[in-house]
Image (cartoon, rainbow, N blue to C red; front, side, top):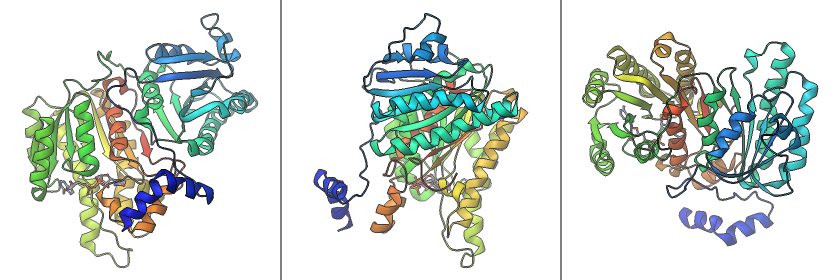
Amino acid sequence: MSDRIEKLINSAAGKKLLGAMGVTVATDLQRYNTSQTSYFAGTVLVGAGENAKLLPNIQTNLKDSDAQVFYSPDAAAQLAGDADSNASSERYQALIFDGSGFVDATELVSAYRFFNANIRKLKSSGRIVILGRPHLQCKTPEAAATQRALEGLSRSLAKEVGGKGATAQLITVAEGAEANLDSSLRFILSPKSAYISGQVIKVRSADTPAIADWHKPLAGKIALVTGASRGIGEAIADTLARDGATIVGVDVAPMEADLNKVMARLNGKAVIADITSADAPASIAKALSELGGADIIVHNAGVTRDKTIANMNEQQWQMTLDINLAAAQRITAELLKTNTINDGGSIVGVSSMNGIGGQRGQTNYAASKAGVIGYVDFMAQSKELADKNITVNAVAPGFIETAMTAAIPLFTRMFGRRLNSLSQGGLPVDVAETISFFGNPASRGVSGNTVRVCGQSWFGA
Ligand code: NAD
């Protein structure tokens, strides 16, 4: 019955009826498919504030796409004859604005002018990308305030364009990390980031190898995925394998048949282990070292044991904290101790929106998922990872359509999935694409980030 109601709502007639009733109707998001020849096709308008520093990097990046690029007069003037000012009255698939040179609040008016004149021209499923500098690395308080202002601007733009399935993000690029912008700009412009909006991606300086084939950026890499037999973990395994990686999937004994099925399909290796068991870190390290070590570690396995804290027993608390947080730390520690994570590798934690915003009945879960973010923040600054060029990041999914969320009662579910700027739930592949972006060797400048994959959920920061 609930499936029939759901189908009706999502049919063309259902959407029309909802629209007529004034209910926000979700726009179908465009997602990546492997037949796409380049990461981006369509028209782009590039604008810039004073002293914009990233225009040449934007220009180089777009040359590798199927974009038709237009420049605002300000941007063209700063490219010094390298680009004509050919802004037209076209509609655009993407609006990119370089605000990296802003040092004073009064200068922000050029960002206002750019978006005031052009935001109506953004197509559905379009992209807004604002580029700036990390505010804490600015030289004056005025510059720091101005750079931080770009965050409020981009998050608000995301809310203004979400209704047409379009997204907006800020990418902050540290001084000296200009060449590291490439992988983030590709990811955000591409359909791979369909369900990410209102986010800030921080890019720092790092040596990155050239990518021979952007359709297989993980070629030759070994990836560990815990909880790989179903749901988001299965999608992560599928996506990393699609991008060229060999998968080592871990799950508990009751999921053995499902895990074997997924690993057989992907030509991967199944490891049956409860990640909280005492011997799990060593057995996972052994399985990975037999393949020459791991390049991407994805701590996806997770559980919920929901109760308000007054009704929660200690076992429900402990079990959730152990699976979602402590076990992943023990495994990472063992892999680092045994040198099983290769130089230039990537560690990814799976957090949650509820770890950011908190949730009634989920004190245990939210504590564990906030802990994942704390671990990422700390480890990204650690010498231990810096010495080996290993990045560490987290994804924080919002409402993702899985067996877990399908079990939520119909009306709560219908309501829950719409509480974000894109008015819909995300797909497991949306989380997986973000993890593949973190694992890409070209993303070595992307570390210490927690990226929410939540359609800009109205809850949390
Ligand atoms: P799921 O329950 O479908 O899958 C979790 C997998 O982890 C299962 O295969 C399970 O067997 C495995 N697992 C659980 N305990 C384990 C253990 N001790 N050792 C080894 N494997 C174990 O859940 P999902 O919806 O696919 O979620 C995956 C991750 O994403 C979790 O960390 C979850 O907290 C997080 N997340 C999900 C959503 C969502 O909307 N579905 C939202 C935010 C975060």
